[in-house]
Image (tube, rainbow, N blue to C red; front, side):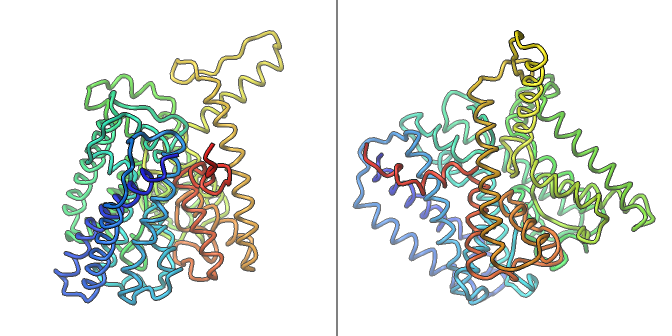
Length: 480
C-alpha cells in the first residue's frame, strides 16, 4: 500500500476544500457577517499546513490499487469533515466540536440531519457552507478531484468505484478522468437549470443556490425552520421534480446527450424507480386526503415527501410524523430503497432491489425445476454471478451494521420509533426520521456518544460500508 500517495491525495483534497470555502467567505462578505473571519482563518491555516506537509511527501508511483483507493476515500471523507467543522466552531455558531462535526458529516454525506434548533438565526455564510457541502459531497469529493486534476494512469477507477454508489460502477468513456469530468458537467448543468427555475419562482439568488445545492446533492439542509413548507406550490413542485431527477442514474443523462433515448426506456432500474414513486404517491395521496380535504394539496404533499424520502433528500413541506400509519410505513420503506445507482441519492439503491428480486425468482424457479439453469438478467443482459453474490453480501453486511448501530444508539434511552428511525435516516443519508427526530425536530436530543455513532452511520451509508469497514480492519494495514 502506497501510504505516501494516500496522504498526498488527502492533503490535496484539503487544499481544494480550503479553496471551495471561498463561496461561503464571499457570502459572508456580501452580508457583512463576522463568520467571514472564521472561514478566512480556516482556509489559510488548512491550505498552508496541507501545502507544507505535501511538499515533504514524494509518493513515487502514482498508481491507485484497489486497497489504496478504498483507504484514500475513507480518510478523505473523514478529513474534509474535520476541517469543514472548524468554521462552525470558530464562529461560535456551533460551539461544540462534536455537534459541528455531526453537522458537517451530515452535509458532506448529503444526509441533512441537523442539531440546530433555530436555523434562521444562523449567518448567511454558515448556511451557504452547510448547503454547499451537499453539492460537494453529492457527486463525490474525490470524483471532483479526478475531474479537475491531471492523471497519468487509469488506476483512479478504484477511487471512482469506491466513491460512486451502486452495485456496478462503469466508465462512460475509456478514461476514468474523462468519466469524472462528464459526470460533473452533467451534475453542474442540471443544478444550474434548477437554480434558474427557482429564481423564476420568486426565490432570491441566495435561496435558489442553497436549495438547489440541497436538491442536487439530495441532502436537504434548509434555511428555514419549517424547511420548504412556507414556499409557494410552484417552488414545491419544482423541488419535488428536481429531487426525482437527481435520484436517477447519471449515466442515463449521458445517453440522452448521445441521443440514445431508446436505451433509457429499456432500463429496468429506471422503470422500477418510476413505478415505486407513482405507487407511493397514489397510496399516500389516498391515505392523507381526509387530513387536507383538498386533492391538489394532498397530491402535492404526497409527491413532495415521496420524492424527498425516496431520493434521500429530506426536505419537508409537511409534518409527515402526524400522517396516518400507512403513509408513515410507506415512507419508512422508501428510506431503505433509496434512489438509483450512479445518482446522488442514498439507500440500498433500486438496482440492488431489482437484482435481489430477480435472484430470488431464479432460486425459487430452481427449487421447482432442479435441472433448470437459472440465469439472472438485467436489461436483457446476463448479470455476472459475482455481481449477484456481491449484492447479497452487501445487503447482509448492511443489515448487520444497521442492527449494531441501532443497539449502540438505544443506550441513549429514547423511544423505539425515534431510535430506529434515527439510524434509518442517518444510515440511508435521509435526515429527518420520526417521533423526536421528525421533520419539525432535530438531532439535538442525542448525547455526544450517539452523535458520533450517527456520524459514523452517515459515513457508512454514503461510502456504502466497505471503504470505512476496511479502514477499521487490522489486516488492511499489514504490509503483506
